[in-house]
Amino acid sequence: MPFELNEEQLLVQKTARDFATGQLAPFAAKWDEDEIFPIPTLRQAAGLGFAGIYVKDDVGGSGLSRFDAALIFEELAAGCTPTAAYISIHNMASWMIDRFGTDEQRRTWLPKLTRMELIASYCLTEAGAGSDAANLKTKAARDGEHYVLNGGKAFISGAGVSDIYVCMVRTGADGPKGISCVVVEKGTKGLSFGKNERKMGWRSQPTATVNFEDCRIPLGNRIGAEGEGFRIAMMGLDGGRINIGACSLGAARAALEQSQRYVVERRQFGKQIGEFQATQFKLADMATDLEASRLMIWNAAAALDRRDPRATMLCAMAKRFASDNASKIANDALQLHGGYGYLKDFPLERHVRDLRVHQILEGTNEIMRVIIAREMMRQ
Image 1 (spheres, rainbow, N blue to C red):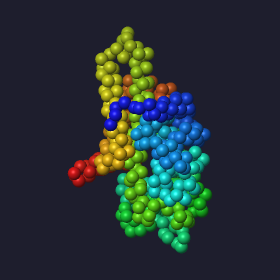
Image 2: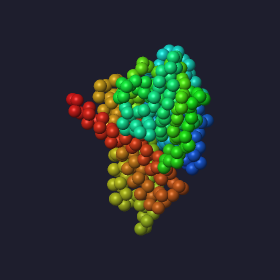
Image 3: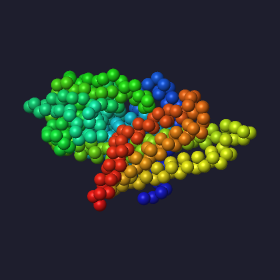
Image 4: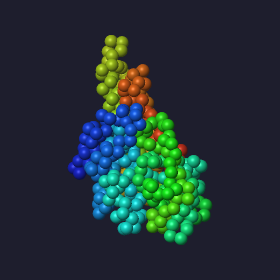
């Protein structure tokens, strides 16, 4: 794996960085404070190709690699972490349609998804099936040329706002082989949403339950074969873990850069606090942990691109390592700011709040350890 980015990758990175600097960072605090879901800004990002990063170009996608996506999401998250993370979710849902859908399905939904004329959500988690995703209960009963859905999904980003819901539902027996993937469109009778959850972080994107009550959808809305849904979900999560790990890098980098500025401005005991060796050692550790995390994300993304058989394990390792380190970096950055870090006048408390969920979603970091250990035992 090359350790230097090529000219095209540098251009992709710069495009994302410029967008984050100009269109995300100046507004991130207000979006957080007022719980604003910035749909116009999401569509601006789509105009740069960020809504279909690894969707094929025949339906409007950018046709880039998972490595390119990691570069993009680090930059976007340095500007606004929850907005970047939502773009990641939209990309994951769109990729599932692109990778497993029929040509008709791809041409029906993806041109509008890649422009974000339609916004997508990914629906796997349920109130009783979080880490134990294969135990999901939402039922899709076949009735002629339709499925009738009953059940509900929990903690769904974009719920109530999104137009397309890529859902994992039970069409067969218990266990992973009884799960299928279907698309439910907003406005379908029997589809409803709970109240917006009151969250610690990620406040600039809505999160709610998605409810199905005799919700009837055509059989033609199934993505892939019956019983293939769990495999689709897990393959999607490999990439999702890289993306959320890259978002973790961006937020941590923003926190570190803010700290580097602060320690030369803040004076105590007659000198800049950056002159104290304790401060220098702290910054050195933060920078080292960030660089190590980035290398793990890049390595896992490259493995996913080349379809390395170890990719699932490497994605789990990278997501666990990067999200844990990023949370620590942001917390250490807050500590370096002392009482000021605790105030909303500075972005540190927002970074800490936003990063905390990265250790939970796309599979908790405990589940990442389960995946890693399981793969190790197979070797």
